[in-house]
Image (cartoon, rainbow, N blue to C red):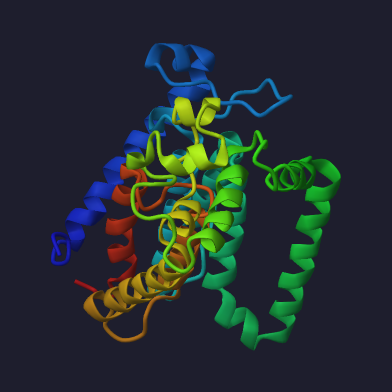
Length: 307
């Protein structure tokens, strides 16, 4: 409601966010680990890989990568609304965005871009057989390249295999595993608000019941808030799933009717699905950075007024 009649202010807000992000990633690329030390940000790396994951001023690679996905969404949405093909400038912007995602080295964002493009172009792909065939063929090529030239499938499978145990060292998987156990144990309402995977769940009896309360992750509160889905499943159970599905549907419906005049922009649905997907491994609903990026941009994309 605060931003509803101030679309131009949203555009200015996001412009300065981009300037802020651009300066940050440039300095991080220029200075490398000196930037991490000077700015006081953790040095994020993958196991067995010495190169750092770039964050810029966002302080976390996932924040930077999500901002870039939003930027790509706005670029594509602008060309769609103006009924224009993507020009050279547009391709340069998209290419820079993809390069930053690679520098941030976030698997969630890589899948997020795929989801964004699939839902954004779905109507066009679905109605055109040749485009559909080309889309499937391109997808096969990308998957083949990932299988051959990266360890992404192996790392994902290793994380999944390590998730089905209370002794797991993969905290996101452990939280998901416990959330599934809680669904059955406290069906249909879950363990209750403030008891699992949320900020008020520190020293929760639930962690003690599972025998994990003395593990590093729970003592230091490291990574246990990363998945909103796990928190929702554990604290609110089966009823929570239904309630949050309804909340997302109501939010989408509100954006369509309050901001869209005529046909709803396809990017609105696409970006909402990306947001939902990010909820699996990121605290989208409880992290200020994600919220302050998402809410204004959802309104900006939903808006179809020319003035």
